[in-house]
Image 1 (cartoon, rainbow, N blue to C red):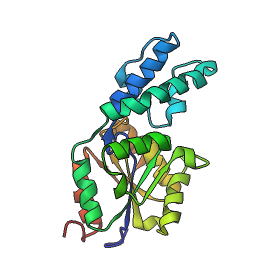
Image 2 (image 1 turned 60 degrees about the vertical axis):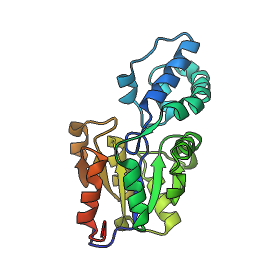
Image 3 (image 1 turned 45 degrees about the vertical axis):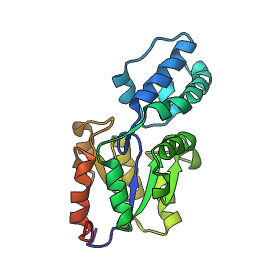
Image 4 (image 1 turned 135 degrees about the horizontal axis):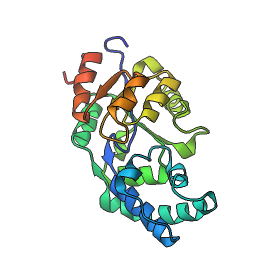
Length: 223
């Protein structure tokens, strides 16, 4: 990636920009209780997210119960998100800083569009993103590169002009599959030892480290 070439930063949502793990756990365990299943610990749920809510539920319930549990979960989650989602440290400041400096911003999430937009509207940042694209709007969700390629196509940007910021191994895989460099932040569901073998462009402990990485990539940042 050449100096001054970076135009677009694509973000994953959960574990990268926001902490919605508690609302996910609340909604999931509410749905489990409704169908007579045992609850699951929050940390186990956190380690299982990132592949979409249907896949999340299928990890814990018999297949014949998936549709019923999913419907209960989604109905409860609409309210739980508004009550419990919050920014990860420095996320809001960084997003506004990037927008002020004329970077194009996008969201690529395996969350359904409905819940992604609930989060972005509730946190009042929906307007910052040039594209918001979720798994239910592409043929193949992450780790396929479809979602990132679709964003690039909409914005008429080539892979070398973009970075993808996520928190999981699936995000590193998605970026590789789309030919985009990734930055993995260790505030979500994957641990460093899981991410390292995938060789992302950078691994950072917290989102606060992103501006320094971008400054090295593109000397215009924060100037």
